[in-house]
Image (cartoon, rainbow, N blue to C red; front, top):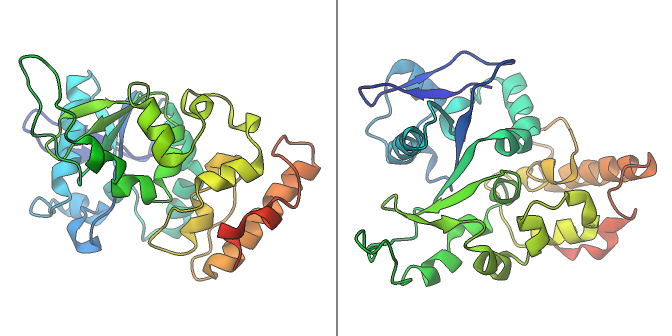
Length: 267
């Protein structure tokens, strides 16, 4: 796992690929913009990327981590060398664990403005709630595990103002996603059937079709080699087979043949 470090001059540097003795870190959850707008691993290693739109949220994550007493932080756009297939595969299979182990998870909502914040009374007019409920963040595949996995999830607006946390916004999140409150409160995912967990992802989308299956690996504690180019149908078939195999081996994943009642995952 490769982390970012914020220097005293507001610059970022990457650590080496850490295996053991990983320091406490914050982690960013966000929605991707256009590929050309995101700061990549190559950008950071070459010392470029500051002019890209995605630089703002990386800077926000580092500065917020520093305010929370954390020197290290992780952002998916630039901490993974996606040109290295082995590293990308490891990251996809480790992602749920990385979010689970983070000291803080910051959700940056680029489509939610909170200009009505009153810094003196520390209150909101809640005019941002309609935009919060419609945020693109709730429609993406990868953000499902980013909502559930971390121990601490905090939501921030476009202006980097804190809107609340998973606990304080529990009712709204439940109403938006349909995810049971118990799951949002950290109840073991094994307490929920496979069919129920699949329903949480039913209306979510991913940029690459195969990610519709790969983004669910952590939700089912499954490890599977990603094969981009196999198509969504084949990726989901392999996921189904792996879940059924785990169930047959006695793992508490729910009933077999779960996919028969999951129309959103039928081809």
